Amino acid sequence: MKRFKKLLVFLLLFSANVVSADYLDDWPDDALCGWMQQSSPPEYIAEEVKKRGILCNDGIASIDPNASSDQSSGNSGIEIYDIVFSEDVLEELIQIAPQESAADFTKSFKQYQLANLQNPLICGFKLQRVVYENNPEGEIEDWNMAQGSLIINGSKVTLDGRWKTGGLSNDPKYLKDEVNLRLTKDGHIVGKMAYFHLFVNNGESAKKPLFIELKKHQKSKTFNFKSFEAYPAAKIWIDVEDWAGGIMTIFNCKDSQEIEKMKLAKDNAEKMFNDELAKEKAARRLLNKIYQPYVLGPNTVFKINYLDGVFKANSSPEDSKKLHDDELHKAHIRGVIESNELNKNLFINSLASIRESENFTALVLISNENEIAPLKDFAKPSIEHCGKLPGWWWDKLSFVISTNDIEIAKKQKCYFDFFNNQTNSEAKSLYRAILSASTSIVSYLEFNVDR
Figure (cartoon, rainbow, N blue to C red):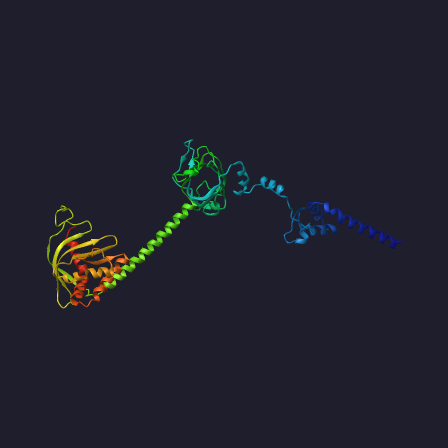
């Protein structure tokens, strides 16, 4: 009998523990901590407190920071799945909590008739602030909040430039990626864009951009497709806040074909310049070879003994001393060419002048005087062999001092080689002597004979 009673008590206690373990799930943490204030709290209460990962202090429950994740989590064994929304539901949810972006304006373009330009346009733009505090018509501030290039392709308007308002506006993405604008058929620019309305100085907290909408504005000067070359092409007014807005000025527009023409013209101009520069350098190198010391030496000079018959540009037409349009510093000269390389000094008595243009400077001497008469016989064959130099004719000898024209330089080199190869030693020496002294003669005429 005693044995039966002990078994009954054991079964009752076991049942109580099981029942207690089940219904404790609904107990609040503070209720468990109330039991834990007893000197010997029930074991199943202590187990539940440990299971929940809580601390009890004067009957008040708090989270035990040292409890393991298995003890502190009541969701052990629960799997979490991603919720997949349909596009319609997702769009409704986004409208409830919209993300600040210019991209969300795309569907609103359906309310406009958009332009469709065949050739892309590239324009300059500047964005200024308009303040309404003191003037209801608005006062345009004299500084640019943003500036750069504006590109219209079809109807889409993109910006390539930078904000100048400091802070986050220094990030180029806001002017590049957060701009969603279109051009309408009637010349307005509409859409949405990130907009930095206030200037942020160094050290100030950053200000996020406003995402403002550009609408058709009654004060805007619309874009005229047929005469966009006018300055400015358009002025687009922008409403931002009650106290201030903005105005975007668009100017200096060029279509893609014109830009390509300009680029081609620029490339051609650069190529032509480089070609001309190369020719000029080649001409100088060629002349330097002719005038190198081996001609007659760097000490070859012309010393004037007599100067007479100075010709003037303002002389009357019948005056025998008239200076023609293609002549400079013309006069009768008499002097001597001295050089250590010469066996004797050469006397010159001749009518001399300077011929000058953008491409050359040349000394011209009349060849019928006695001293240089030996060269006269070689005038015709030298022209037939080399071609005509500026000023060189049957009775005139021309010596090119400087040129940037490679063809003129080649002709001068040809004349030098022509006389240098002559068997007539007198003509060869005379030509080399005058050529060597020509720079000295020109210098004398320039400084001593007025034009």
